[in-house]
Image 1 (cartoon, helix red, strand yellow):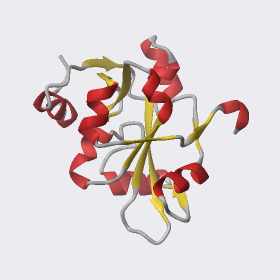
Image 2 (cartoon, helix red, strand yellow):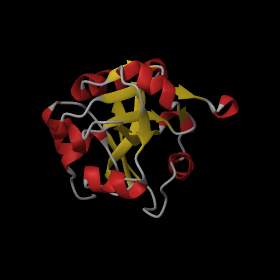
Image 3 (cartoon, one colour):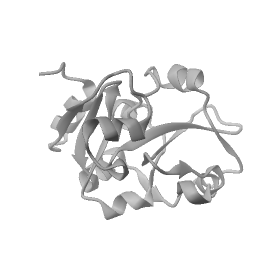
Image 4 (cartoon, one colour):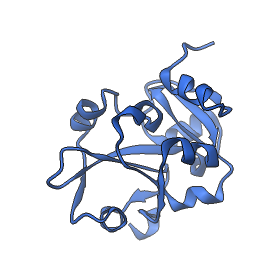
Length: 162
């Protein structure tokens, strides 16, 4: 049994069932994670740290592994002029988590705005990082949205149109 992470404690406190999914912690790419776990890539969601121009507090964008964040769509959805992806070192400094292990469940106490791509509404469960590389949690979508107070928005493009 893997060590219990704070993300799992948060889910247990909220009475949200979850399944732990482990994979080699050398994998950082969400599509490779899906392959290693043997689950469809559209069920594995990655958490991206996005910085808002002129604001210290970043936001999180949680999107399916095969999709691409559309910064213009995210800016429109969040009502700000300009956003940019945080560099890996900045994302790690802001979150205290390593890239490949950034989880919205581990960052709830920061009260950052969290956007979940609208495509998640078509799914019953998704897998998101448990807060460390090599570990995902498979969780039901609706309770997760409520727990994170996440906003559903059209914030991505697929690979073909990117």
